[in-house]
Length: 117
Length: 107
Image (cartoon, rainbow over all chains, first blue to last red; front, side, top):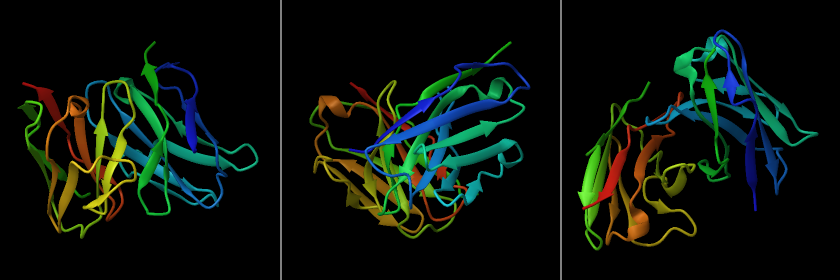
């Protein structure tokens, strides 16, 4: 059973960098696409981007200038960094795996990150 | 970016009702559409992919249809555990986008 678990600080100061890690268990991180999405409190979902286990990435243009994703196959983890955060970046952040069918079947439980001084 | 417009945004229904939610795309996306169910405090759960394929383990009362720009999610007989928010997502082109959601409430 594939499981994903987000981790990282729940509070980040404005203008600083949000850093999250998604740890994958139950399967290898290799040969899959891994994504990040987010959901502001009470609002809808926004796709942030994906990283393949090979390291190739695709980011949402709306966030591209501030997003960096990386993967560590030795730890079965992948990460998200979002720089120069503002209150508008306050959201629950989800990691997910794109399955062989091409759709996102496995999601982490989500982690709430609040941007506030 | 491809915009997805869901309707209605809010729906009040009773147990046993047949419920239909619509998702319209701003341009054609073939059948590259997924439907998710989300309950409060939980991650989205994949219900339907490729517009009409039921994800493993999802009850058969859920069904999806459509292609191109218009899609529907139907729940044939609403059950208590189905009261949730439903989202569509297009995977035809990047950036991936979601619809605004449809909240299904108990009448």
